[in-house]
Image 1 (spheres, one colour):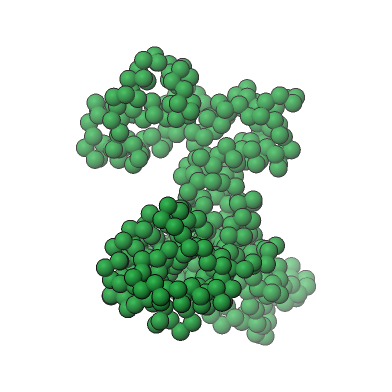
Image 2: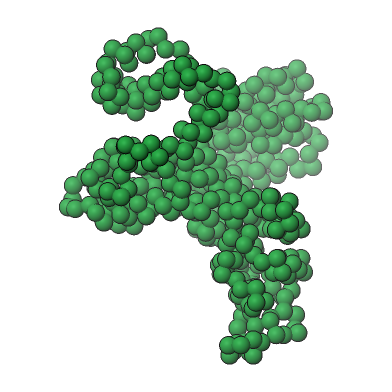
Length: 461
């Protein structure tokens, strides 16, 4: 699935006084087949790179430089000192955006440390390219989630996915399994913990012998046996009955289990991925979920964002569902995107996918998708405030501002300014179209552009 890693390349910048020592270091890197591109002052770096420095007085400048370029490089920056580092310096540079910090002469194999990091970044880049093709979205929070998924796929520890229903937990599990680098990896086995019957002593997990209970007419392997050498996905782990939590913990600790009705211990070795929409931390406090099991299953914790936190991804998701689920490639009217982008989706991406299916089924002919293709039951009820798009988020935003001491007049001014900015941005700066959208005069928006001060509260809403 992933391409072979090519020859290592990186840019190089420095804050060094001893250029002779730096030249020796560069020669050592090039000898190890690392292509080094030395940046000039006006260059803006992209991709992975290394920053060298050799005196404590340069630390402030190095931290400021790393902080400025980290967003351009995806934080793929290694900071390397050619002299001893004062205590606390590494943390400062890491907080500024560096991915790693070390002293060249103190490292046992400094070149290997750099090349290993470059190989890891190249592999992660290829994984992200793959993930972006199947897990659609371009928002900042979604991109950060995909980076975490790529990291989890490369690790061997258990993964716990937290997220509301419909955020894609099973789909992401399948991608983690697909990217898992184990050379002889076996199948992914999915178990829905809400369907496990405690009275059968977890036969779905452990398997059973013939005659172990009524209707056990033959011997059957359970999920632990089927997932051996592969991945076991326990969906809705928070619903697992308490007696089975203890038995699952034993299997995870010892790698052995017994079929129901058998006295023979069998071995199993699988990677565990669990998911839940419950707050397991609270369940641990209340005693509904074992604390020791929680720590065992959460080697990697990943929270999947609900759709309301990544609304800018909705148009991309709409296009994806229309094209891949329904083979529809017609133009979508911007008003359709606008409505869907502000509509509430308690069921998250799954609910959006179902709505897009209803829109696709209602659409006639080869013309563009318009508001008329939205089924009547899915349209906003403008006379009823309870059904206005985004009402829940607006209510929460108003509450936060109210508790912060914002009065009614200031609140009204802020919302008005917000609406003007959104309309102007949405219409790409076209004042006439923005005014038509808001139902106000062009002069009002022109005055807004000239006189309205930046609203400090807008970014917090």
